[in-house]
Image 1 (cartoon, rainbow, N blue to C red):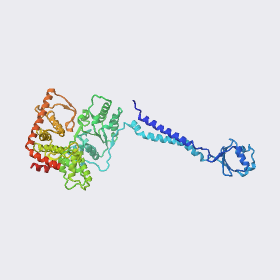
Image 2: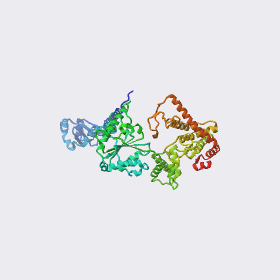
Image 3: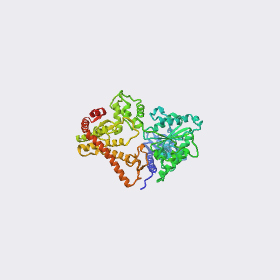
Image 4: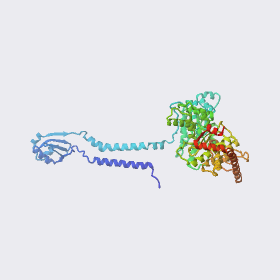
Amino acid sequence: MKKRNPFFKGLIKNIFFVVLIFISLWAFLSVFDFNYFAQKNVSEASIPKIVEYINNGEVKQIEVYKNDIRVELKDESLLKSKKEPGITLTENLSYFELDQSKLEDISFVYKEDSSEWLWPFLLMVVLPFVLLGVFFFFFFRKSKGGITQTFDFTRPKAKMFVQNGKKINFSDVAGLKEEKEELKEIVDFLKHPGKYMKMGAKIPKGVLLVGPAGCGKTLLARAIAGESNVPFFYVSGSSFIEMFVGVGSSRVRNLFETAKRQQPCLIFIDELDSIGKVRGISMSGGNEEREQTLNQLLTEMDGFEKNDKIIILGATNRVDVLDPALLRPGRFDRKVVVNLPDINEREDILKIHARGKPLGEDVNLREVAERTPGFSGADLENVVNEAAILTAKNEEEKVSQRNILESIEKVLLGPEKKTRVFSKEEKEIAAYHEAGHAIVASFVPNSEPVRKISIISRGMAAGYTLQVPEREKRFRRKSDLVSEIAVLLGGYLTEEMVYGEVSSGASEDLKRASRLARRIVKSLGMSSFGPIVFGERNEDIFLGYEGAETKNYSEDTAIKIDNEIKNIILEAEKKAKEILVKYKDILEKVTRELITKETLERDEYEKLLGI
């Protein structure tokens, strides 16, 4: 069934209320008589009857207004009547047997046109139009947003950046030294363009900021806006796309026309991949509209007309899906990769976010940086903020190291679920499981040290073993990856060794182990197949995406790949089993301590190991 248009639906509803108001007003006004002499306790009387009262000397006063007559008798009763139009009251009365001498004792009052007509006029004429005007005022005010959007949807959604409060500079962005040096050239060109033009140099038309989410791409753009002192327009890539055909390309044109009037200037387009994806066969109108928007952007950046003093900044974490025409020299010809921070950069980031927070004397930001490998700048900000919230919640005066370390685990796994009650048997299973992970991690070669073991539930996990590397690793060998698989299998194998069967708690560990073994064989060339990569993916792995795989190998090869993956997992399993059997006494000791304390820190755990 076809739905009624909301605009007409609202219009019909409002018209109904207006009609209802007019009917109510008419009913209200109909009970009033706007005759000048309309009063209560006034009797109707004919002219002959009034003549009779005059002849009997009973009339005190007669008021005349146009053709209306009001007679006040000496007993204070009132009469009203009408005279014949076109003649005076005296003439009208003389038609009857009137005693003229009696008129001398009567007071005559003749009323002229006065403001008494104003109220009837206002109520019957003006008020309906006022109500109608009020109705249309509110109706069109309500629909103004939709009407304005309908007729004004081609205007660009870009906003000019205005510094509110503290100005953000490059000094407020921790780490990223090389990235900031690249961007300082852009700022320097905007401030001193003559220095570069004198050498015949051309500043890049576009700079593309690439990296995982939360690494500071937008923060860098804000720092550029704070440093450059030129007009800075910012807009999201998704704001160019609408349901109307041609709106996106029109907004791009209008954006650059606005920017031309402010040259030199900067335009920042966040989430550029929403309009910059590779062009291809369009399957829908929305896809075609996106391509037209991209075509217009390509033309404006480096087309027939030159925009030499407009610099485009783009940010995306999906550079692999961008159209090649967008990345060629003359458009986004400079790519700045913003990676996850290393340990030194994490410490600097923590110092910035710790400003304005009362830190305790025991706070060691270097230790916090060591415990947060793989954290982005946004994650670190969240850790410090959660620590401040926890401090306020506990009504403490300063943020302690304990609160910060607690916040790391909260960000990683979620809040502790101390109210979740486990049976004695389940608690023992969890303790054996986590102890198995820890023992294998402590004795397998090339593994990371254990920082903490806990069987307190967090998020989806019934317990966890926290490993933190002592130093940053950019490259990993096969032996490192096999050791990681062995650690993942430690809990599974411990349950099997102690109980003769396994629980469902190892399911996530097995998924991660299988995924890592498959990557060793298919992506890293660390198997007996040699330097061959199997399968093709559209996304870059370093950004954390594993898109749909295109199979480029035969079924026989697939069987061999499966066998190779199995052999790697079995190799890791053998290593883990040997360690668990060899150090079974330590395993039991750690398990019993975990059941008692529920959480073991690194110092407590290493005492049990005898280190």
